[in-house]
Amino acid sequence: MDDSKLTVRAVERALDILLCFAEDSDLSLTEIASRIGLHKSTVHRLLASLEVKGFVRRNADTERYRLGYRMWELSANLIQDGDPAVIVLPEMERLKDAVEETVSLYILDDLERIRVQAVQSSQAIRRVAPVGARLPLHLGASSKVLVAFSEPEVLDRVLASDVWTSEDQKAAFLDELTDTRKKGYATSLEEREEGAAAVSAPIFDRSHRLVAALAISGPTNRLTPERMVADAPVLLEAAARMGRMIK
Image (cartoon, rainbow, N blue to C red):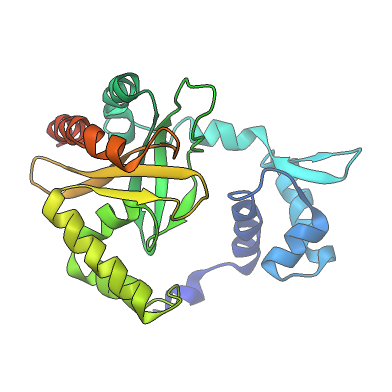
């Protein structure tokens, strides 16, 4: 049976509303309606139901919405003892102390990567990495790592997507993947954000299956190309230790 026939339209729409808050923490009724393509009256009714159940809360003064405390209750049960993001956290803290920059953990999800864990640098000027952020797979050091060491069909799907501005950009990406496989790690310099740099390495489990990408990120004035090369051995060692911790 077609899975689409098993879905409930009202539930789908309510979930679409909640997903709007993956990118913004504070939204108006008009903004939500525009993002999901529904009439404001329909969205208002759905928001009212979500508010009653505690999944969203409305500021009576500004008439804007935020996620409710019920979401925190659900998220408390999301992370289990066997979750790699929890298992490797002490090693991420150790790496952060060694390099004094922000350390992040990314996993592959369709044609995006998701930051599932982060340890922020204690530097006054630092790279802030919010957990849960979704990022494209054609830009950034961690994207190169996840694509380079995944199954070939992942690369095929990325190349077939509509994110490329030119064939030259696509060719340059392929060259960087080759370099990533050769070195065992990838770097990026202002690829996604001006003033930001990162170096990333793969984490393989005991069966040599790619689990995640581990990354060090920071401002370009500190995380220079020379500094990233110097930090790469420390990063690779940390990634290897983390891999041995994951079954």
